[in-house]
Length: 439
Image 1: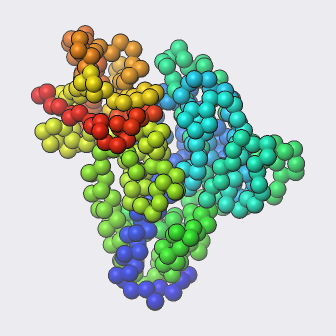
Image 2 (image 1 turned 60 degrees about the vertical axis):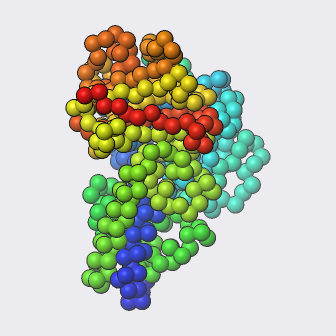
Image 3 (image 1 turned 180 degrees about the vertical axis):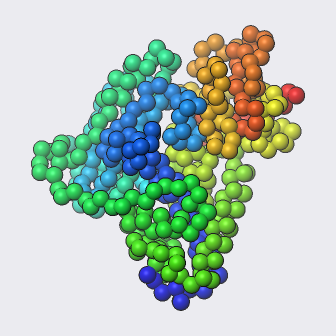
């Protein structure tokens, strides 16, 4: 433990609020890690560390692996423990198909990207190394991704052009493989890292002092960074980061200060996220994000594992044109894109509806979750404009039904993804049209 007698309640409250914002992405990331890599009883379990679980078909309303999932690019999921040795990722030739494999640290900052934009279509072999790896690693590899944390996640995205395309996506996903470095080099593996007692994830932990207990555990996989030394020092004064933090060991007034800090941070995050309409600045590498920890927390809150703007631009409708926040499926809505105002994409774009509060896909008999530039049969007006119809039931007009996007009977939110955004989206010249209320 640190020496809490040296810390006054006001300082603890401020530190707790700052730490909750800073640590929010770590704990949200652990939420996914726990279900996919640790909890064998969870249907989302991928098989532990060091293995891929591929989803060659698009997500549906039955999937709950991650909030605000994409239906355009089926996922591949993997988690790596880098404590003992690096891992090697092999990828096949994707041709002209859009694809991306992103590697992220425990706090969701991206380590690197392998895909159409960054490394091109061809096959490759990449080394993923943790903070303790001292080797060079460049010889024999097409790239080296050096993580700042000892646990990392890998998320693959592969464009799917409909049900008939599933076998081709399956074949490409099978070509993405992971092996320990020792297996690639045919050398004796190093001693295995000790297996800790992994804390069970509980949804209610965000509002309790156990949040700091889980943060204390996760910091054991996250060596301090120079830019975060001051916060880590203040947490250490409270015993957070020692590996055995016990809130009950703190004086009552400091425990109350921690609770007040959590409440302050939750209010700050909720208020900031309510005004966010696009993804610029919320996702990226550690260099891109810098010390804007509130932006990173908003990214984890609004769309965990979102991509940096140069890869994909995200924009959303949190309210309709009448000011209803959030929009509600009891009303019909439209989105109208003028012919010269379609989303500016180099690859493709799509609009997806998510039910609230869980931000998951909307169940509907048509299994229709998104529409976009590659949706077959979209009906454009004679002038080239496009109007999407958002409502619980299909429109009676065939032309409108072709552009139908189902909404839930209650509150919802809408997200636009632009893959390969053109400069007009990135610099603000292109703007989202209003979500117009029909009745």
